[in-house]
Length: 574
Image (tube, rainbow, N blue to C red; front, side):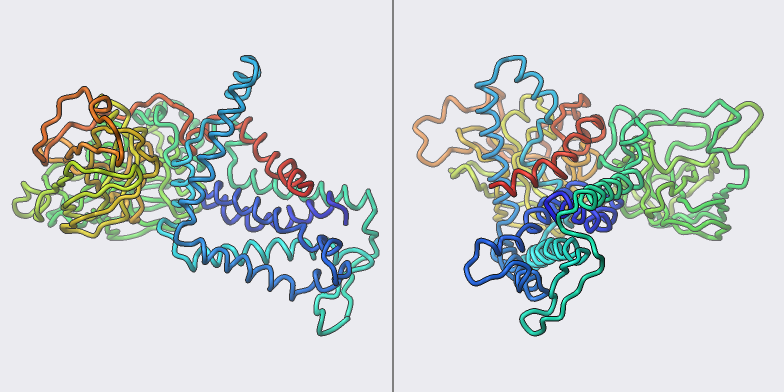
């Protein structure tokens, strides 16, 4: 096989892995895997340049697959403790080089490239990749990733050679048995072109099956972690009797009940297809912004009738901001039914901007309405204070720092969470999703002292920093406030204000600190009810990974093609 044929075979081999990752919304991780596999795949043909090796000898054997996998696995283990930090440093350097290049281009070319290529911040890329990798990743996880990429890339190359007439000897140096699966010649242009075309078709099918919005328009349904924030307004009542989501077979019954506030029971539900029950606080005949009113969501329910379905009120639904561990107020609540339209067992109606998991509706005359029911829920006992644990608090003293690490003296997170550090722009009304410069690892419920935080963006001048204790609203022990555009992991509040404390950070070795002091007057006395957190700016800045992908499908196609063809070609010529 020539380079074109091997690329096609690599695409075919990568397609199953790409499907598994993309169907789970992990597109960025899939792209990293592809780049790694393409970097490894040409290695067996480097045997021409290594003394003592014959072409298609031991370099094209299963032993070579094992060796390359172990070597890359070992590198992954060695880099495991600082893998994401190294990636952040590399991306920061690349962004600096890119900005330097743009500075020497004519204005027209600069404007074109700036509009075509997204302004993705290194911190957001690393944060998104870390989230898709499962949050806190151990050294052994990096080792497994390295081994998988190494072995996958080598096997992809061998698959290209095994379908030629010369084949490979997979068991060298222990056996010279040759394996050849077809009479194709390695230099057959027709065969190589056909293989490349088949690979491109396979990847196109993966894209069509996992991110249909990218092909059909309107933005992908599952690429963005939060969807388009501006699209998440009130839920419109459909007015067409021919609504394609209409279903007269879906029913739900929510009976009046007295509960302790932790679990709500839906008496019965009938679903014509798999879906979810969502508990809403707006009551009958009322609508509001869904992410502000949805309290709990059931597990995925199969098609059919279910009795006495329990909804645990223990964490915020995906995309919702209501973070209630218990219901604290008696009143009227509603239950509505939603589909699991992409069959992934995750409720994504809010996070996809109403593109996925659409609600069931029923026809009534000329108006279609949500399939829902309401009931009076009485909370047993007094629950004026939803948190029986100590209130959240934080102490962030003035300190001298090296620009990379800061220390929070003490923090109390009643339900667990994180400490988030913002730069002084936060005090001037800056968007909290853009002023964040670092956050801690997950902290268990209780009080923690001397919490060290490594900043994602180094602080280069003296200034006021703000520390905020944040909840883990989605319960995944990974800080998702930025990734979800301020929907998840919001700050603890006291009296309606975000709990904060400020510290004057002086860079070690700095000559003067006066210039960097914030113009906003801030008390030096630590307080548990500091500056009220500004509302997130809903203007799309293009800096968030998921949001940019969702709103730039054409540019995404260009980037994917570059990753599949251009980047590997350049790599092989180095």
